[in-house]
Each structure stands twice: as C-alpha cells, then as structure tokens.
Image (cartoon, rainbow, N blue to C red; front, side, top):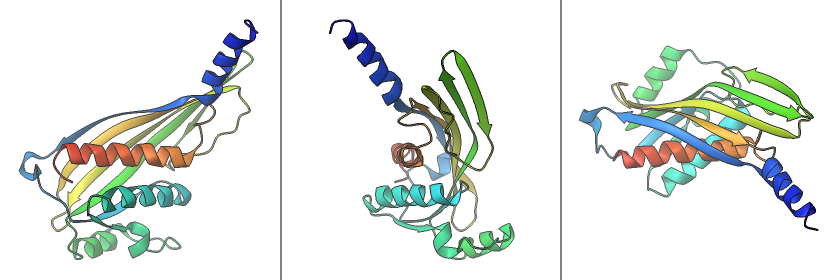
Length: 194
C-alpha cells in the first residue's frame, strides 16, 4: 500500500490537472469609472465555443445588472456580414460598449511514453485535441477589447492566456469559456467599468 499511494497521487495530478489564467488589462483614463449598462458582445471563436462564452458572459453581467446582446442575437450565424454594415448597425443601437473577444492561437502538447506530440491551432479559437497522450497541456491566447458603443473608440484592452494542464481540462471548451469570461469580467470590474 505504501508503494501504491505515491503512484496514485502522481496519476491524479497528471490526469486531473488545473486551469490557470494570466492576463493584463488597460483602460483609457478618460473612460475610467464609466459604468456600463448595456453591452454588445462578439467572439471570434467557433460557433460552439461562442455560444458557451456568450452564456457565461451574460450570466456574469446579468448578476451585475448589465444587459447583454450577443452577435448571434443581432446577426444570425448562418450567413456572413460585411464588417462595415455590422459596425453601422451596432453603433446605431445605443450600446454603452462593444466587447470583442478574439483568439490568436491554441498550442497543445501531449506526452506519452517518452514521446512528445505538438499541435498548434490558428484563429478558429479553441479546438478539441485527442492525441491519446497520457498527459496533455494546452495554452490558449486571447484578447478582449471594449469600444464606445456610439463612437466605436477603443477604451479597454485585455490580453491573456489560459493554461489547461492535465487531460481533464485540455479540449474542454466549457472550462475555457469560464476562464475567459471570468478574466474579462473581473478585470473590467477592477477597472471600474462594471
């Protein structure tokens, strides 16, 4: 039993893992302490991830009394919309802010029996990885920007990364959506915007 316990603890750590988010945000001083009441949110991930992220952001902002309208509510996802028409329609709606969330890449590393498998993904957001590795680690880089709802002048920016460490978290879009939403909302609140 004494020999099995350390092996079990290591296995739980390797398979269980954790998620960690690091981010840094900035706000234009002329907008500091501007309270937002209604926001438009747009995410540039894949459709499945966008829905999860919108749901989490809506829940977090509803709890703060802030109304949320998502891109998919104004622009159904079954067709493409020219950027200039989207911006014109959004700026005419009277939102306090437009929050745009984008992803630069996700890098996943898998370890199995001394082998290392490395996969990189582009701007399509998070992508599920199933390489069969015993241990996996993924880093997703993201940014969030907020623009004045009328002038579309940028007044807030946050860049960050989410580390999914262990097979329980790698490829889990729900955990990734939770981490990004929490990071954006907490930082905007700390800056006096929410």
